[in-house]
Image 1: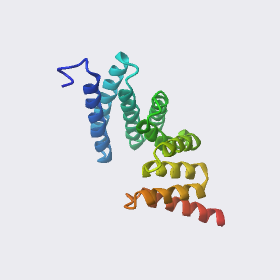
Image 2: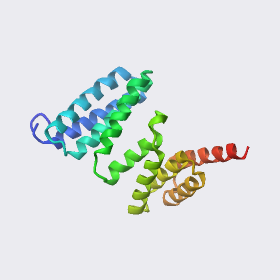
Image 3: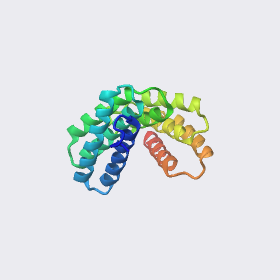
Image 4: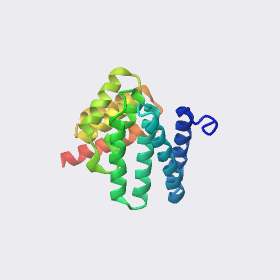
Length: 193
């Protein structure tokens, strides 16, 4: 469809999202050269869409996600400086997005957990999580973001409280709550030594 209707950004956005997802999978399989090729195509497609439609939020979001995947490819290839620049570019793209929950959640998660610790901004991630939990208090993922952001900001008690809320909302934990709790208990243990 993207070839038949090149003027429809949604078709090209979906193509680029698919390329990004495939690149993410290949990265996990450590097929980095193949992943890099797919991500280059995805980034090129997103950039072309935004050149013609700068306000196209789904394409900007896709570009931000593709940049984070590309950064992870570079980390896996031991190219830390390139990875850092890709994460920085992703953060700039996220900054330009409207405050929609889907965009904000991914942005907050990156700010709390960026693989380049110097780029983390747990206080901004915490502010995002507070907005999200206020809008949708029954969303366990938003509470997990709150927990992780609180942990990164050094507020262990708040982190544990947020995890407990997430667990009540989603009792069949996918491992995220357990992981965050383990981090909190390890931090508490270090503080009592």
